[in-house]
Image (tube, rainbow, N blue to C red; front, side, top):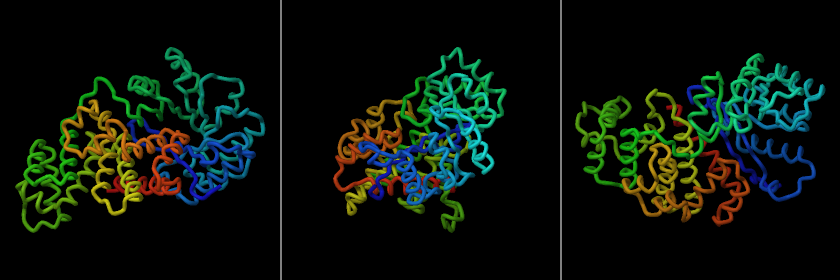
Amino acid sequence: MPDGDIFLARQPILDRNQIIVAYELLFRSSQANHAIIENELHATAHVIVSLFNEMGLQSVLGKERGFINVSAEMLMSDMLQLLPSDRIVIELLESIAITPAILDQCRKLKGDGFALALDDFAIMQEQYRDLLPIVDIIKVDLMQIPGGALTNTVLKLKQYPAKLLAEKVETREEFEQCKKLGFHYFQGYYFAKPVILTGKRAEPSTLALFKLLSLVLDDASSNELEAAIKSDSNLIYNLLKLVNSVGAGAHQKIDSLSKAVMVIGRRQLQRWLQLLLYTINDKGQTSNPLLQLAATRAKMLEILYRSLNNQDTAGQEHAFITGTFSLLDTLLSMPMTAIMAELKLHDEVKEALINRAGPLGIMLKLIEALETGNFEAAQELLKQLPGLDAAMLNEAQMAAIRWVSSLSDH
């Protein structure tokens, strides 16, 4: 297997406050998409070892835990002992036949410090009778359970010590229902897929922030920047607070926007806006999953573009803003065409965001394919970007994940 031919997707798992607490990791070698694998266990072992040795556990997971799907053969092998028990949750695929040997191995892994999760639970089967008391997390598949039957399913599961995780949550209604039923964790496209939610209003401060960032990246005049800041009282307060801080190096109190913009400088203003963008929610918590996803896309697009056009700094800025704004239709509950009409952005950026066209549009589609675990599509899109390969894609992905993780440390 050629080095670097590994594709990775991370799907966030959240708690009741919609804070990311773990990621489910999906990965595959590029050869596994089209070649006949004679020994699936060996192929998967190769991918896992490469993933953690080459990409690095910290880069992949940050501070969170990782869920890894395992088959019966993998479960019974020694391969899992290579993984850190305090960071990895072993996710038992629903296809595993629960035998006495499987149960003994689960107990052994628990004794070694691993947490166990049962994947895709839908129907109470007899074979689960001895397994459910052992596992730490039960992942309930909402797609396989009729809405009226979910309450009874939860009542049956609450007799076991395991925490409940609702997977394939696709709407706010499903999320709220599962919260009321007592689910501890949640996973699904509602949290990490760009779906416009009806009935959600855009926060003016959020739109003002995006407008200001687009002006900075477009090298707008100081008067235009000042006017954009004046449009939102929160931006005024936060900017003056920043520029008068000790770290900003101001020698006298600054109380005018024009002086504030001059003192802080364009690059520092851009950095401040990026940080503010990912911590802007009302509760003062780390950004929601969609904002983190947008941040990861932005940095990854910038790195990929730089790999193809190292000297084109303007194009790299366009790539970054394409990723940053790629989820605006979801965050603001507005059509992307309407948002683009309000923002002063380069035509190449608009074409990528509205139509997923042009080099930036293809790169964005490539990243979206990785996010959803559609590795076959990722391979085809890579072919449309001469100069990029799987190794470069992996490197960009890990660098972007590290960068987003560093934002949350500030």
